[in-house]
Length: 256
Ligand code: NAD
Image 1 (tube, rainbow, N blue to C red):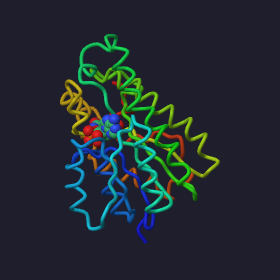
Image 2 (image 1 turned 180 degrees about the vertical axis):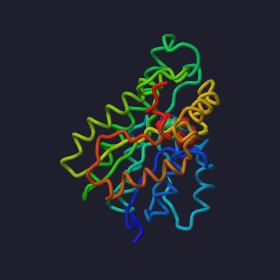
Image 3 (image 1 turned 90 degrees about the vertical axis):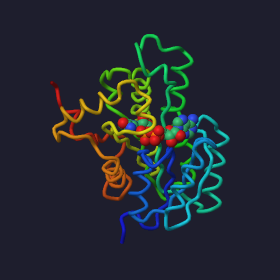
């Protein structure tokens, strides 16, 4: 039997075929899960619809701007009506205004700081809370972080504190959700060339630096993040919660 056979997963964060969320979706689908997808807005809807059209089984698709509680409620209502339960949640969502991803961190405006933390960190709390009533037989949640949460990465700026908040939220949520047998973890992924990543000034330099310095001397592939995501939500990881798993070709262990 496939690892996730008979399970139902919610995937938040597919923008296009390069998205980390799409790599995770493919891995979860290959492992046998049925999937529900959200998209941010009409601009992303067509892309996601085209991707889903290529899948062998029909997938459920819901609009969900994660800053909008009504959208989150509506998404879980659709899942409740269609399946009556949920096993996994992928939160693969982040945003910072472009001007905040270049120059000095000290110049970050209050507004840019707030919107970045709202979309990139608080949304995990809101999405998790909505998922709990549907995870009646336990469940597993997963978010995607980056090394900029703990070390300074040029131009990552306000996204660094937002990822630090995301990782701390994973630990606090793990404590709240553990008694319900719901696990939550995050993957700290090495750099992958995606729409969001290309918004960071000098992202190509980050890619080259990682490939040159990581013990494996290369960058991670999105499908490797998908494989780790499958492990983390599967029963093989049944005692793992509140963790940050590095899927970065080992980059984080290097000093110099
Ligand atoms: P991406 O652009 O493909 O995905 C980002 C997603 O966030 C998009 O689908 C976008 O629609 C969604 N989003 C943004 N604002 C939203 C909102 N208000 N409501 C709903 N959705 C919203 O880029 P990606 O690199 O696949 O990013 C996915 C996650 O992976 C992010 O959390 C990112 O920080 C993280 N990450 C990326 C890298 C990398 O190098 N690409 C490395 C480590 C972590």
